[in-house]
Structure formats: C-alpha cells, structure tokens
Image (cartoon, rainbow, N blue to C red; front, side):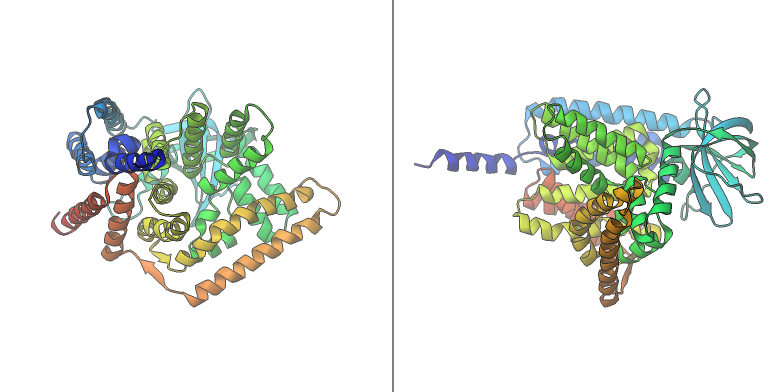
Length: 497
C-alpha cells in the first residue's frame, strides 16, 4: 500500500501532465494574441478583421495543441480571454485608424522630458501643459539651445507627422516615437526657456549632475544607471561590445534589487508588502518609468497582490500578465526595443523556472536561453550580437547583484558630503575595474559576433517555443509538436509569402 506522500506526488504529476494552457498560463495566450494582432495590423498592414481572425486562430491552435483532456471549467476562462482580445482589437483599431489629432502650427508651453543628440540634431521630447496634453518632438538643427530635463519651454513651429519607411524595412521613426508617446515633430522651432518644472524629470537631472560631480567616472556611470536611468556613453559602448547592455537599462534586474532591499528594510513592519509596493513604484517613476522597469514593477505588484490574497501564481503567467497590462495601457510599447527585449528575457527566465529540472540545471540553462531569445531581436535591431555574451551574462547577473548594492552603499557618504567619503568610493571603483578587465579578456578569447540569419531565427523559435510551451502546461511531446508547427509556419511565411 503506497503512502500518502507518494499518492500526492502521483496526483501532482498527473495534474501537471494533463493540465492545459488555459489553466496554467491564460495570460500568455492573451499576450500572444495582443502581440500578433499588433504586428499584423501595424507592421504588415493587415486589415483589422483579418488580423483578428488570424491571431485568434493561432491562440486557439496553441490551446488545442497543449490540452490533453478538455475541461468544462475552462469555458469561463475562454470567454474572458475572448472578451479581452476583442476589446484590445477594437482599441488598437480605433487608435491606428484615428485621424492625426494635432494642429498644423502650434504655439504652446511644455516641460522637457528627455534630451538626445541625434546626429547633427538635438532632439527634445516635450510634454504640453496638463490642460492640452500630448508630447511633441522638437528637432533643433540650426540653433541648438542648452536644454535640460525639467525646463519649461515656450515654443512655436510647424508640426509634421513622423516618417515611415517606404519599403517597410529600416528605421521606423513613427513607431519609435509613438512608443514614447510622441504625437508629431517640429523642425527648428522657436523656443525659449521660461522656467523650471520641479518634476521627476528635473529631479533625475539634478541627481545625475550631483553623481557626475561627486563620484569617479566608472562608479558614477553605474550609479547613474541604477538610480536615474541615465547612461554614460563610455560604459554603454563597453557593455554593448560584450552583450551586457541590459545592466545599464533599468529593468527587472534593478527593480528586483529594490524589492530585495525593501524586503530587508521593512522586515519588522506589519504592512511590509504595501511599503515594498510604494518603494518599487517610487523607484520606477524616479528612474523614468522605462517600459522594462514598468514591466518589472507590474510583475512584482501582481506577485505582491497574490501574496496578500494568499495565492501563489505561475511566474510565467505573471510575467505575461504584466506584459498584457502594459500593452493595454499603451499598445505602441510593442515597438519599443526595451519592452521587447525585457519581455523576451523575463519570459525565458520564468519558463526555465517552471521547467521540471533541478536548480543547478535551471541555472545552467537560463543564460543560454535568454541570450538565444533576445539575440534575434538584438541582431535585427543592432546588426550584430557578441557571442561572448553567452559566457559573460552567466557571470554578470550574480556579480552585479552584489556590485550595485556595494556601489550605492559606498557612494552614499560622498553624495551626502560626509568627510572622507572618497575613501569608500575607491572600493566599487576597483571592483568595477576588475569586472571590465574580466569581460574584456573573455571578449578577447571569444571575439566573434553573430549577425541576423534564418538559422539563428529558426533555432531561437524552436527552442523558445519548446520552453514556453512547457511553462504553459504542455506535455513534452506536445511541446515538441508546437515547436515543429511554429518552425513550419515561419518557414512558410519566409519562403512563400
């Protein structure tokens, strides 16, 4: 006679093997629909109805392939997903087919949110005052004024729509700035600074200036990246060459560190999770609310909400739900490269967590899968991806989990103006120098880059589909079947369409 423990294990195994995507990861199905619909309607210019039907059929196919034993209890989930997908499709259709809602000429005031040097131009994304709303991109070519985030401008000029590539291939100015909330651009506007807005953008700029003036170059660059979201050009170039640029972009890694910090600081407080939520969102807003940071904040908030409700969720489903929330809030985020890379990375990590492997195997598989999942998008966008990133990222995540808190703790005395604070700053400066030498040596031993190719695309599709299917509740043989079907569909689309 078997023991209760063995019987419970058998039941859990049976339940896992015969579960369905609707039970395990319904949010992933919703995210799959939203992503496909956006890609078909905006990128490939399919009619909305055709895109809706195709996206719905793909999601139905995913559910049918992954379900072994249909259950009537899944019908309410199906109805809720169908309603959500329909509402999302209607919202996107309305936004993409709405006429351009901006005047031909404009004279207004607004706050400078970000400044970028773009070739021979200076670009300033400006948010109009609250009663008007909207964001406009000011492009200065002839006279390049000294602007700072938080400046209040009075400006005027002729508006023009963002450009789109005629062939559909190449940089799409329209989608790039739409993802950042831009409505239109104004070339060489007449602009005058009339004041300062004490907003998060202004606070970030003041903090950045303080960090640059106080800390050594390397430590300053890393502290800026993790606290204000600003990037040092030298560090950005170095990390791009070794495939670790994500360490400088505020993302789930950094928000996760803040979560662990809050978990430690508020250990003795009763409303611990509420205080952690406030800390996470304050940090996300302070660093500029980048799509990758917003995704991480939403995901952690869902985890906290589940904890408060006494329910533990599937991390893969939670990551998918966070992505859906962002797309529902702003569908144009789908074309933000930061959002895409962030979603691919977190879905890959959580799919590994959900796999039936021991912790050591999961740790070994995580870095290659994340690299493979993000390499296709990165190679398509940036032309090449360093192969050394496979090894360096395996070491970078645990290393910077300690380096960032050490850098912040050692920098605090100097930033607060305490006597002798420069002595503590020497510690992270030495550690960051050691890391840069290590990553440079690994790059020297493995100098090859990987460019975008069909082989890379097919390899990534097959691998990612398998792990995503397993995380959705597919049996192994059905996950393999899903990978084969996705490969066949991709090959057909490339060679015959």
